[in-house]
Length: 121
Length: 121
DNA sequence: GTTATATTTCGATATGTCTAGAAACATGGA
DNA sequence: TCCATGTTTCTAGACATATCGAAATATAAC
Image (cartoon, rainbow over all chains, first blue to last red; front, top):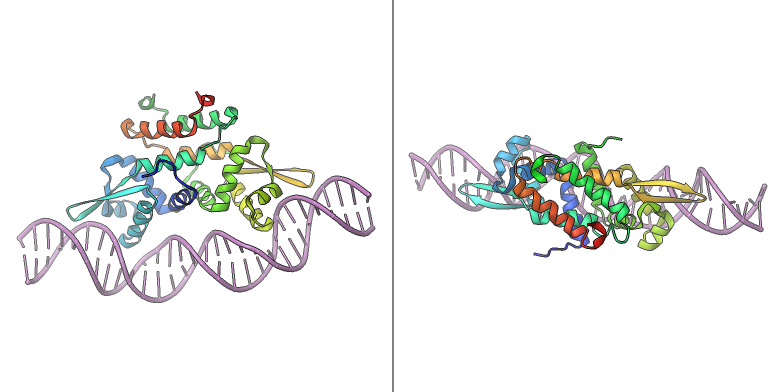
């Protein structure tokens, strides 16, 4: 797909994340990694009814923040890292145009927040 | 304030950005940097009625993504970098817990998307 | 084929958000 | 004081989203 998103894609992705159940699902999937999780397991873990969660998962998938694959009777959802990267890039795009003083601390602090452990050095 | 946000703060920030006018304002303010812009100038630049924009600016400020200061008759809005950093950190928090393979590309690509110029090396 | 499991779609209600006209409020200049 | 400029609050209507019971669909095991 496109590496650079436009504003309507960004709004769709942000709107998808701006809801408690969906944000929890997204973070759950981020930690689960590429293996992903079955829809039913997610619903059980988050204590959300199946039908309600199904709608939320569809919203995340439509926003390119998650993907689905079938395995037997289950549907496995996994985070879409490319879509996630595109959103984060869009948010901070151009912030350093000629102004590294305001941009650099933001990026470095973001990195620090994510990767304090030795795994990301 | 708090360096680490909770989920309700994250939802508020994401919801604030999940709207065309507000997302445009946010990106405008990111580029404007700490000097910020007057509310009226933003409204003119984005062709949004003053009262409508005022509501949007209040939403961004409430979400800790923007701050306001008065200068004469004008109200100058500027991006809140600390709040922005907190949101980005929250989104990718824990994604690398034991799985640097999935986390590192995400972070590196985000950096690449933001800072291709020599200003951020 | 029948039954059990997994997930999605349908339908209806409730709740929340966007928008902009009009009025109110604040500040600075004549 | 009076007026002009800049911004916010009030209000109401239009629109979008969240939720979940019930029904429908898909797959696998027996």
